[in-house]
Length: 193
Image (tube, rainbow, N blue to C red; front, top):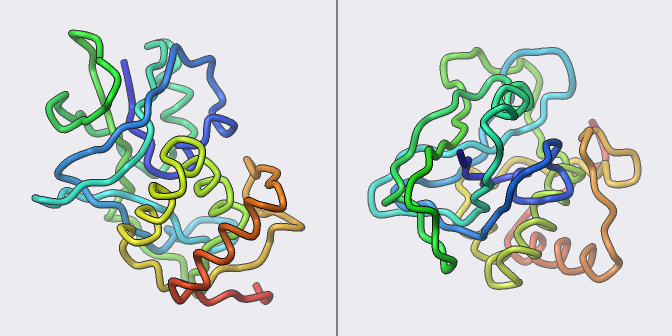
């Protein structure tokens, strides 16, 4: 089976199961966007989700995993629902197996939002952007920023003391590239939680 990662699942360093393989991919008919975190314990961090959107698409990583690992991935993606996607919606340069089940995780829309103001965790965003840069290059990184809706939440500078449990280490070049790209696209950074 396979699942399409469009956020932190694009970064292979954040995967917690022994996957079979993964290929850069694009999911047609869906768009990625930030949304408010559900009302649950912890920091009110924005989360990424996707929604069906005719004529649109988003880059990501198609991860092939073992069926017995699906429960672990479902647990990681708590408060998301696993949705089956048709193979025809997935574009890759690499040839795909003839038959496989594919899924995408969509944030549960019926959960009440967190009462505190929403912020994007820089530590989470770093993991996502590092994954996009590795899988889709600088052009894919630029597409990630431009194609992701609701990118107007402030970004909490938590890189040095990460809130995100699967935070990654960036090179100096990655830090500069990511911060410059976000600043050029109007991102607002905050030091206050």
